[in-house]
Length: 436
Image (cartoon, rainbow, N blue to C red; front, side):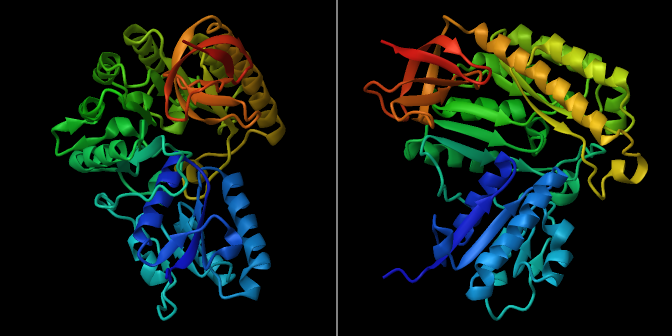
């Protein structure tokens, strides 16, 4: 008879957080079983994101809701883990909204923190070394096809608007042997695709002998049928060596997420991005040179401190020059504790931020649609990832360029590779049919 307590994990934010939730599930697996029904849970852990204020406010509202629904009427424990931990630990404990708080490097202490007899409720200490090398993630919410693998943690870039170096600590890379072992175990379980994760994967370095292109080459060489993706790249570190490795391996997806954040040199300098508009465009040219078919996506921030109308126009012109396939676009939101919050003035009125963001979104919708229209009549190899949310008669999957394609099921199965000819499209999705 299974006497394990029931654990429910709710995850917010980036792919790294979802990967961390799988590590948490593995660490606690001796004493807790993952449950999909929150009402059956003995422990609820909320894995959090601090990248923007609205992400934090969403979590705080959720904690109030969970307390009202569950905590006052049972012995259930609620914990907050992840990037919000250090920023909110005192406030949350003081208000009794949570029982425990654990930062991104403190998950090994969760079992102890959850013990009824343990008095200390928090652990937000950040590490200077890779923390979970020997932990095999418990992929409790996986489709069995695609998996995330964390290859490094933290960030040394200190972009002036970003809290990541403060919430996740300094960069440290994982032993490549453990990464390759994890890849092989995923292959043995039938996985077909892995995404290598890090705040800045281009900074990966092990023992001064293995850099990120070397690691990509090793991972891609494990099995030619395994698809490889990665996120995220910092433009200042995107090397020709990596692009050459990507071009040389057919199973490395020809897709790069390269956050620009702004098209203005003045704003890039204020953001401490450590590159110029000209450098960024040179990196785009290099991508096109080595991989003309590559898909390119980005992040854009509207209304950063001191942004003028000309700075905004520079961003729009950069978007047009690159012709991104996809973009994540946001209004600037000041984060306490960052360099920008201490030294710069958040002086762009909200209505102007909103207008500029709307213009960025409208332009990107046009660019995305144009990109998709250019794929009409083309055929792509697609890994079937699941059933379409719109119809049980259709599958969806992604091509090498990370574009979603929807097509009739026929007699194929999830996890199969199929060739799909694109017949129509929307702004966000390609529609097609499987080619025999």
